[in-house]
Length: 491
Image (cartoon, rainbow, N blue to C red; front, side, top):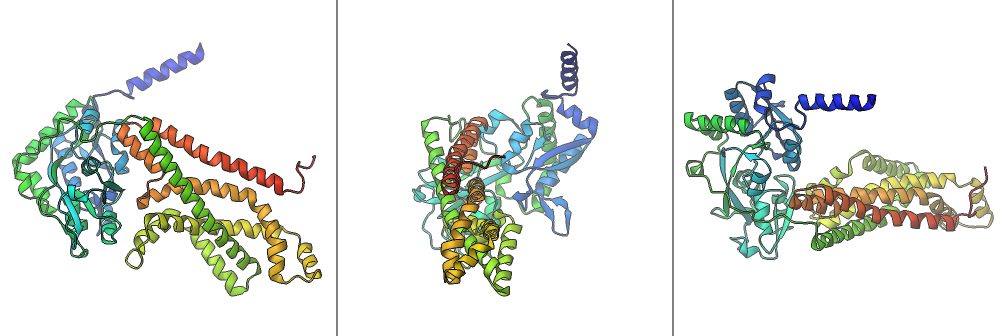
């Protein structure tokens, strides 16, 4: 009874504090004197970005708009950094008050959250290579076209018979277009004008005309109608007194579109909400095959690299041992995601790897460093008498290593090798950053399509377990067969 009373008091206290309660946000904002708004710095210039002259300060036209709205509400604006793909879910979790980060007005978002009046009219711009003859999306049938995830441009591409290649950053799609990894890029004109069709990319051109138009809006939680009304009023006043135009002109964003009526939002989604059916499960299975294939190829590369590095460290001279150690420390001391970016994007001007090749190389080179330490420990664990016995039999050093030491070392290294492979299987999710659609990326795409993370997340976890558990069991069986005794020693 005492525990029940404490629980009742706790629930009552949470309710009184507004936990999970809709509405009242405007009053809370004014009470604390602060309007928190979520955005992602990765969106870059001109949205929200760090001031080059003072990196501790965040600037951009949306920063100016947020400050202007907050000032008209009688409070201060506070920027909150969140990943762009998680802005709307984080808004619903009440992590901040509003979202403003190139958020496009779409029917799907309108069903999920409240949308303010528009503060910018954008156009979808198609970018192709200079020697390309593509001018419309219809011309790109069956081709690879890049865009950002969870955008109106992505919806437009999914409605066409082509392959949409998804990115998280603004510059990467145009790098792949230059390197002929894709045939076109469809993104907002703000992004195309600053990252795609610029003097530093002479191989890229923007097709004249608008593929489509849309508007940027502020996202507000359902139930916060008073906050929406206040924000709409502030935006209306900013349009009336010219402050909004002044902000847009400051970043060279004012164009003829801003003086025209905003485009009418479609009555229905371009791409309808999906269910977790047989077709989607089939996509998950295909992605699981990609994950397994990448992991196997990468590990097949990591094992010989690790063996060579371990032999160099244990039996090599000073120079060889030092070079091997440098390799190991560099690849173990830097994130594998960074290594993937360097391989795929950093080396692109000199040699252009395909996404799968870069993924296998990146994971294989990284895990080769870890395998090297596993094999080095196994070689050092072999009794010195084994080497002496081989010498007594007249075996050459290479023969001793091949026929005596390595077989025993591999047997000793089998358990940690299994752990490394399972880790590699999970780390393969990082290759989605270089456009490979593996299991985790398929899960995130499905979560967006379904407007839910629970079922796709559980399906993804189940498939990862289905991939890793049999491999662990196989390794245990091999370990038992290779061991001298089938049972552990009695204590």
